[in-house]
Image (cartoon, rainbow, N blue to C red; front, side, top):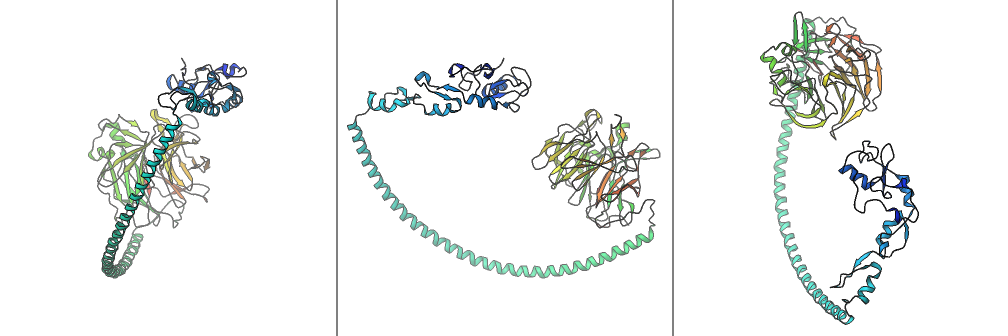
Length: 592
């Protein structure tokens, strides 16, 4: 049953109007002429604003007439009805007290506030009678039996005036005394401040003379250090030149691919971990290799201390962090190995400033996770979605996360600082790219292995997500790179075009601001669970799965100038579900 209000906020009684009011202008709840009319979303049922808001708050979130879902946010103002009713004539609220005026509804409130028939109380002590506002003065001065006579009032005024004069005299004396005391106090304060400042100034001068001498000594020492540093750099450059010469004479670089032209903006590429198949072996590996643009080939470097696949990586402050992951043999066959069991619980750390590259000790992570994404946005590491295993002993007990969290990573321990946002639905095996304060979260899959075509924009300033235009079709296990204002989406698994799971070779660009889709030339191979990087304007996509198994091949495409993809030197190991990063600076990363 609809809630019927019992106060003055309800509609106007029909009898108050000068002319008859049509029944279509009656509130469906209080049955009076509507006041500040509101209508429901689709069927235009009309209510007083107060009546319908109380109904929604107390009874149910539905229209009392048509029962459609209704909230205060979806109510619409009945502007045409309100404008029509505002011109009708209505009697005063105080008609029962004698007011006979009819006023436009839009002017009623102003009239009531100033109406001479409004009730007021006599202010004479001992009376308190309720009278009309327009009769107040006459009642208090002529009619009221408690009114004061003129003689007593003049006497009271004279006494009050004399009291005011006496008080003014005392206040003036007090002010003169206070002013004298304040002047004396200010003079003393100024004297003490001057003495203190003079003493401090002399002390500072002495300290500055000592500091100037120390600065001069430091500048001399710095000049000596710079001179020694330049000499060391010269020696280092000579050593590197000799090492490069030795390496080039010892290694014959051959490549079956089209010649790749390095540019000043290309940086070396590191790949690590992943799933691997070779002969009878299938499982995760700890192998790490780097592609050198100078050598145009892949070189093995120090392996990770544990195996991991389907992990996520990020680079912060010249340190590479690899987080989470799993091992398929451990899940399928219950394989137990100390190196495998620890993989999902630890963060592998590689200091990119130290040569030769060596994996540091592992940092503990709060829980096992896989299929997630870790990205750096405004110097903050974010952890987005993925599969979490709350029970570390049961590999089948898992849940897909809908959280975006802020992480703190360091060599001793890693932790989730706080949860920033919840996505509209959980997702894993998705793509992520950063555009200043905005993180685009692309595709993936959710509970029940349902593939997603949705795209979310997470604002790191407000910690809120909003929906962007969707992808052309659901997509997961794809690779993504950022190019200018675009996300380039490569390969993946989709239910397009025949509603079956298909490994894709398509490449599309998604505009980060408008969601506009642009198609690029397709890759040479179908690829899912692959990795891609962009260095300069060159996109390199590596490994992954095709219809024929796990790949070690790679291919590249130059944005803005290429018309097709060309093969790139193949990796030393076939890999899927691995991580890949562009090293943040040029240097000799490979072991000689």
